[in-house]
Length: 345
Image (cartoon, rainbow, N blue to C red; front, side, top):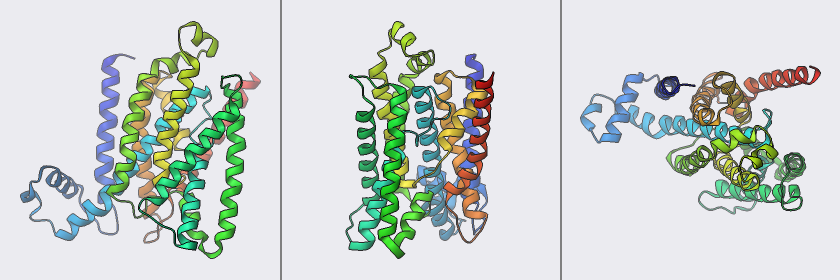
C-alpha cells in the first residue's frame, strides 16, 4: 500500500472518530448540539471561558463531567480490545483468536467478581478495588496459562490455546460459584460481566490510556516480526526472528492492554474478534497498517455500540456487551462457515 493511500485512510478514520465523539456526546436524554459540545471541549482545553458564556452551566457539566468521559473511555476501550485482538490473532496465526482466547479476560472477570463479592457481602472496600482485583486476576490467569503451555522452555501455539481453554473453563466455574454465594447481591457481578460504561468518569480514562499508548508502541515495534510469523515459526526463526522472545513480549503486551480495558468496563466481547478481521479484509495482513487502523475502527465501533446501548431502551440502559454480542455473533458464525469452506477446499 502506498504512503499516500495509508495517509488518506488514517486521516479519514481520524475524522470519523472525531465526528463520532462529538455526535455521541451530543446524544442523550438532554439533546445538545454537536457545535456546543465542540465549544465546551475547546473552552476546557484552552481555558477560553468566553467561548461558553452563552451555554448553561448544567449543559457544560453534562458534557464535561458525564458524557465526554464516557465517550472517550468507550473509544479507548474499543481501541484497546481491537489492538489486543490483532496481537493475539497475529501471534496465534488464527483469525478466530481474540482477547478472550487465552483466559486473560476470564481472569480479569474473576478478579472483579471477587472484588464485588467482598465489597457487597463483608464491606471490604478501598479506592479502585475492582480494577486492581481485575488486573491481578488477569495476570494470574496469564501466569497459569503460560506455565501450563510451556514445553521444554518453548510455548507452542496449540498448547497455549488448550491451556487458555482449560483456565477459562475453571475461572468460569469460580465466577458461577461467587454468583451463587452472592445470592440476592449477584446483580452487581452480573452487570459487570455483561460489560458497560455506566457511571464511568475521568479517573477510569487514566487507568486505560497509559497501557493503550505503551501497548500500541510495543506492538508497532514488533509489527514486522508479526508479519514474518504469519509464514510460520520455523520460517521466522530462519529469517532471524527470536520467536520465543517475541511470543512472550506480545503475549504480555496484548494481555496488559486487555486487562486495563476489562478492569474498568467489564466483559465486552467480540470487539477484538470482528474489528481486526473486518479491517484485514480491507487493508490486508500487514500489521504496520493493521494495528493503527484497527485501533481507530475499534474506537468508533464501541462508541456507537454504547450510544445504542444507552438510547435503544431509554431511559433504561442495557450493557454495551450485549450490543457487541448481537453484532459479533453473526460475524463469528460467518467466520466459522468460511473456515469450513476453506477446509473442504
